[in-house]
Image (cartoon, rainbow, N blue to C red):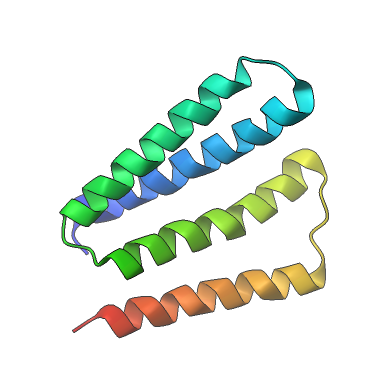
Length: 110
C-alpha cells in the first residue's frame, strides 16, 4: 500500500468516525446542526475510500480495514464520550476484528 493509499484510507476512517459520532449526537440531542457533520463525515469517508481503491488497494483489504477500524474505534469512542458499555466480551470482539483484518491484509499480499 503506497503512502497516498494509506493516508486516504486513514482519512476515510476518520470521516466515517466523524459521521457516526455526529449521527449519535444528532439522534440524541435533536439538534439539526449535527446532521451537517453526518453528511460531511460520510462524504469524506466514501470519497477517500474511493481514492484508496483508485490507488490499487484491493476492495476486500480496503473495506476490511475501513469497516473494522470504524467498528473498533467507534466502540471505544462511544465508551469515552457517551458512557456506553464496553464489556470484556466486547473487547475480545474488538481484538478478534483487528486479528481478522490483519489476516485479510497478510492474505492479500502477493
